[in-house]
Image 1 (cartoon, chains in turn blue, cyan):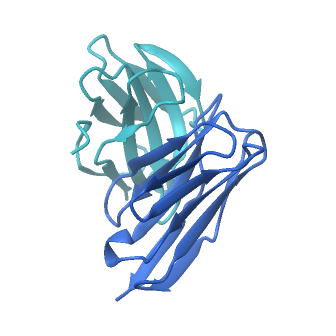
Image 2 (cartoon, chains in turn purple, green):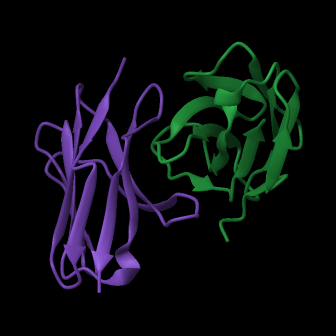
Length: 108
Length: 114
């Protein structure tokens, strides 16, 4: 079945540093979504990417969908303590498949 | 607040028992998804319903079953519980059944099996 991998598994950064998480699929994706889960919270939808090579920005967050629609990335510029949490990518398709997530900690 | 409600918030039960988790989707959402999240783990997709019909099945054990009722609320039944079933169970809803629409997650039910 479809597999979605994410790297890194954990990332510790100093406040103000940049952060990137990568999502890779074994198959071509129809779309990809990103979610954020704060510690003790529930996943919250961030964005959906549909088109090959698509780039979307939300303030300090930049999302990219690869040209082959098999990978995606989330980049956070100048991290803040409010960015702490686990970031999941989720591949749309026959079944909805979440990646294992990247846990981000931000040191003040 | 996502608009998705789940009850109960916490549940503690013994091995071998059966429990029912309840989810009410956002107003207007026809699709309901169930996920299991074990401690420090990712989200495991269990099952999806759309307007009362089963739409997709993930890694759901035979001891687990679910249904979606005419009023669109959903229940997840877990039976013959084992210690390994202890986890956070999330319900999510979306506007339509296609997987291209964002999912809104409820606060989850934390199940502890002792």
